[in-house]
Image (tube, rainbow, N blue to C red; front, side, top):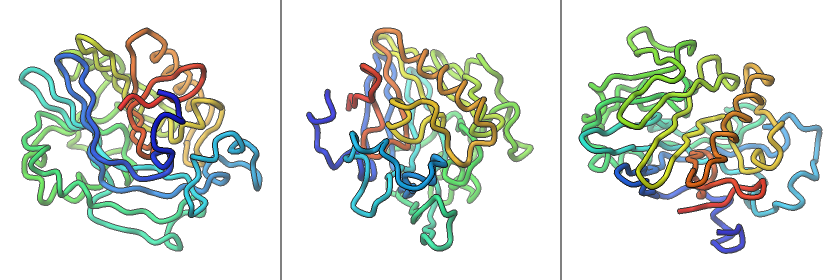
Length: 268
């Protein structure tokens, strides 16, 4: 699917619920909200940039990139895993956030309580607010999640009762953790092997489809830009095999896709 073959608005609007069948495993994106990203400040660019000249559809009417916030529900035979924990039931105005951000809005996950149900584990890609919000609030209103083990990368600053996961560790049948440090010290990604498709959950190694085209761009919040670039390169290599797709949960309303000719191609 080329960028012109779907609604142009999807590139710059918050995500809706979307699912992808992998063959024996299903991945469902459940939105919690969104955050606005300043298109130049987020990538530490000086002033206006021509990088968006060829991709005007990425810029919302507010002048921002729209980064969706949400979770990924992975379901396989006899197991269910939730990836990340959203922002939680809160909203932050633009003047109370970082200069690289606009408004932040969360809370949408509450409407998916019946969809999420009971899970066997929660995997946190990293411990930033927009990925651990509901977990830090005790999963109020989401009783099927609160008692599940919470897994996080070995080097990630996180609560002591969260279990630590190593690079290459199998979390569930067909689900393997991949260490992708740089955005944070212990950032995790996942590789999910279905019978028909292979899914790479990239976490915050990518924040915008623009980084697929210009991989050297780093977030202003990356703690180690050099390692962030290395991890992004690793994720792009993971996406090369035929039949591989990705879940990039900050990519507006195009969270599932594959890389074709150096660009993000939505698949759901």
